[in-house]
Length: 88
Image (cartoon, rainbow, N blue to C red; front, side):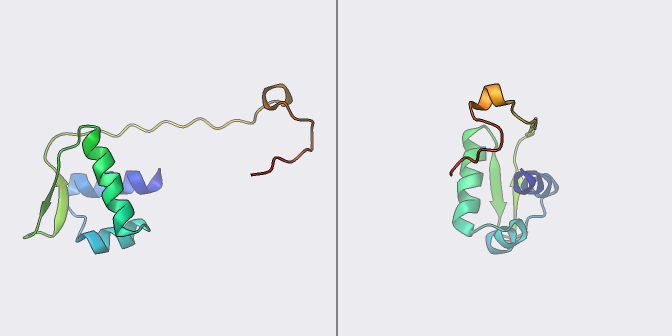
């Protein structure tokens, strides 16, 4: 979520830098960066890239609204006894 929020801020400001620099700033590979940008485009974000300014930018108004709720699950909801561990 932090990476997506940071990417959104940089896109809005038009100050992402080159793809290589942006991927380093976000702590992800360039291929992952392009996957995220592709996903945003699929959700309606018109994202362009200026070679002159070396930045990605939004070509349309776009909002990202992320909501997250964290809470412990009760034993009844998890179906496990207290103290048992779940293998991943």
